[in-house]
Structures are given as C-alpha cells and as structure tokens.
Length: 88
Image 1 (tube, rainbow, N blue to C red):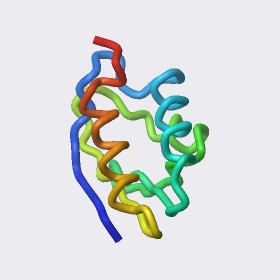
Image 2: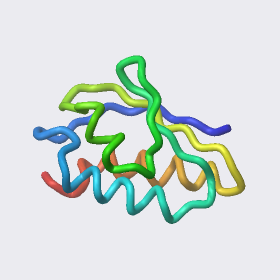
Image 3: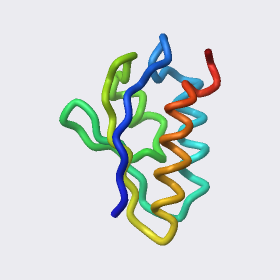
Image 4: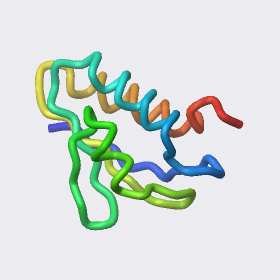
C-alpha cells in the first residue's frame, strides 16, 4: 500500500467539478484507491462518496492506493490536489 497526505488548498474545496476530475483520474488506475479524512475512509472512485465527505479548504486528506500501479495513482492524485485542480 502506498499513501500520501496533502491539504486541500483551493478556495471552494472539493465541490462537483474537482470531485469529478479526481474520480476520472482515480479510475484510470487498476489499484484500489481511497481517501481518508475527518476520521472516514471512502472509495476515491465514487463521486458520491467524495462529495459526502464535505472536503473544504484546509482539510488534510490522505490518498491511499493498493494494487499494481499504486505509487503512480497516489502521485497523480496528490499532484491534482496540490495543483488546486487547475482552478486558481
């Protein structure tokens, strides 16, 4: 299992568009991908699960992946979050 921790920095947090981009990126990988935040762990390939977490600016999240391309998945998703989903 590979994991990385980062903080949501875009002003609006993870709303519909960033959640959609996150899920589209996560589904490119074979590995099981999850997000941990606020004491919950959800499937990162489910937009409804990500939206249900209410991830706002300043929330620390851990991206976890387990499978054949886990390191690539974690790196790609962390870069996406760190780039503020290209919103700013």
